[in-house]
Image (tube, rainbow, N blue to C red):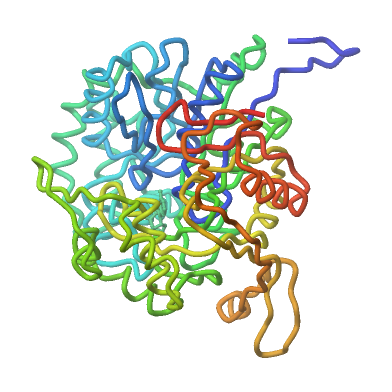
Length: 476
Ligand code: IMP
C-alpha cells in the first residue's frame, strides 16, 4: 500500500481474457505469467464447469473446470469468485484430482461464500436444450436463478437450517424441482469444503492493500459474453474484463492491466455466427452433429490411425492426407484439416470445434471492450504447414455493399457479413514454429505474421505459444 497525499494507492491486478469464442489456451498463458511475473493470487470471476482449462505439471496433463488454474503452483492462493456458478459434486471431484496432482486445495483454495450453487434442477433444465448448443452443465439456468433471486449460495452449505431454508425457497420459486438429492449432496460436502468457504471479496481487498499481486482469470471469452458477445449464442455470464470487478467484488481501480489471449486462427463451439468459418454453413451443421467426433472425421477422410488403451484414436497430424486436405480448394475440407492439425475437439464432449481464418475485426473489438494492453498468441505452430494464411481485416455487408472495419453492433448485420481478407504468403513449410522458444529463432514468415497483427491491433504480442508443452513459449 502506498500513500499518495491523503489517498491510499493500492496494488492493482491483471485480468486474463479470451479474445475470441473460447478455447484460446488461457490456462497455458496464465501458467507462463505465474512463472514470468509472480502472482500471489489467481481469482476466477465467472462461469462454471462449462470451462476446461488445461495445465501441464511435471509432464502430466491436468484439466481444471472450476478450480482456478494456479492450483498446482505451491505459492499461489486460488480464489473462486462470487461470480461463479459451482456444481458441488464436480468441485469435490476436482479437489481430489488437484490433491492427487500435488496441489494443496485445503490451504490454497478459497470459495466465495457468495458464489452460486448449480443444483441438479439446473443441469436437468439445461439438458432439455438451450437452443444455442450449451455445454449442458446447468450454467444458464443457474444464472437465471441468481436473477430471479431463488439461487442457493455457497454460504448456505455451512449450516443445516440455512441450507434447508434456501432449498425450500428454491423449490417454491421453481415448482417441480426435486431438492432432496441436493440436500444430501450438499450436507455431505460440508466437512470436505466448508473450511474453504470465505469472504473472498474482502480477502482480495486485503491482498491488494498488502501489495500482493492478483491475476483475475476469465473463462470462455469476449464473443461469448452475454452482453457484448454474439447474443443469443453466448454463455450466461460476463467473461469480459469488467466481469472481474463484479465477479470478484473488486473496484475498477483495482485493475491496471488486461491481457487478451487469441489463437493464431479462430474456433467456435456451439451455434452462432462466425464470419471467417472455413466451410460456412456446411461446417456449422457438420460440427453440430454429436456423432461427428474425431474418429468419425478420420474415417470420413480415410486418414490412418491406431487406438490407444482407452480406445482413443491416435493419428499423425503431419499425415500426408491431412496436408493434402489443407491445400484443397474446398474450404470445408480445409477446415477439417485445420481441426485435425490443431486437435480442435472439445475436451469433455469430444465435439468438433468449428475452425476458421484469423479475424482481426473480432480481435480489435475484444481490445476495445476489454481495454486490452497486451496480447498473447497461442497455437501459432498449427499454421506451420500453411503456404498462405488469410486474415480478415474488415467485413462487407452484402445487403448494402458497405465495408465495415469495426464489429457491427446489430446481430442481423453480423450474421450476414463476409470477411475482407488480407492474404499473407506463409511458405516455406520447412521453417517450423513448433517448439520454438525464442523470438530470434522464430522463422521470418511467423515474425511477419505476428508483427502484422501487432501493427493492425496496435498492441504488443508479449507471449507466443509454439506447441502444447509448457516450455514451448516465447516471452518478449
Ligand atoms: P453454456 O455456457 O454451457 O451455457 O453454453 C453457451 C455457449 O457457450 C455454447 O455455444 C457453448 O459451446 C459455449 N461455451 C461455453 N463454455 C465454453 C468454453 O469454455 N469454450 C468454448 N465455448 C464455450
